[in-house]
Image 1: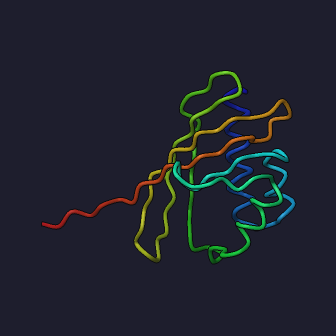
Image 2 (image 1 turned 120 degrees about the vertical axis):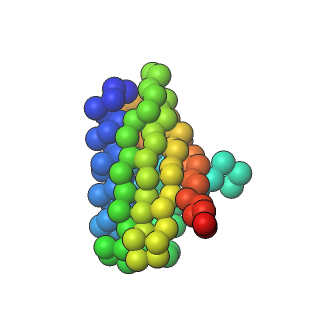
Length: 122
């Protein structure tokens, strides 16, 4: 995987999230992909299961903004960093994604680490 390949995948990830098109979501992931919302959760397995889970509780259209970029790439593994914002809620998250890709450029392992911005008073 190259920086361009990973950026293209991240852009497609954001587009699929924006549209909630089950085929677009599933096409990002291999048939046996392991998808974790955090490093301690049991993974969802396979693109169809990932798409179905995304569709269970979708974010309202226009309620969020996101930007992610590759940070490090080695072979078929990548680390991406970025930010997800929910302006109406006043929330901002820093994101780190650990990604592995198959030979077709689909994600075969996805683990998210996210951190809610802490607001300091005073």
